[in-house]
Image 1 (cartoon, rainbow, N blue to C red):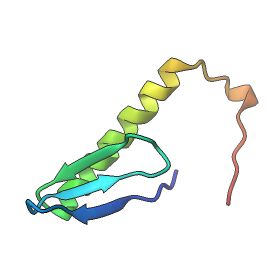
Image 2 (image 1 turned 120 degrees about the horizontal axis):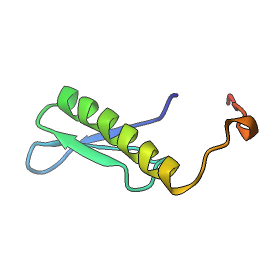
Image 3 (image 1 turned 90 degrees about the vertical axis):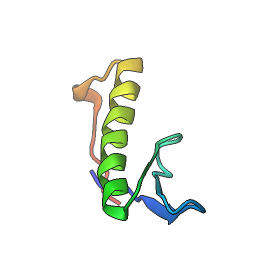
Image 4 (image 1 turned 45 degrees about the vertical axis):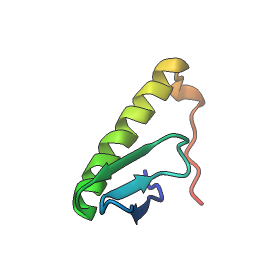
Length: 66
């Protein structure tokens, strides 16, 4: 899965990472590398929560490449 991540440095020097396609999926780190590691964990957690809210039927799933 490929997702776009926006990383910006805040006024305190931390790097804040956001995934626009996943509402509320945010993380941060002291370095850009740490922010990337942390946002990957946040994405995994976000997806787990969303899957637990709705039953997933793999027979109805399709892959769309854009």
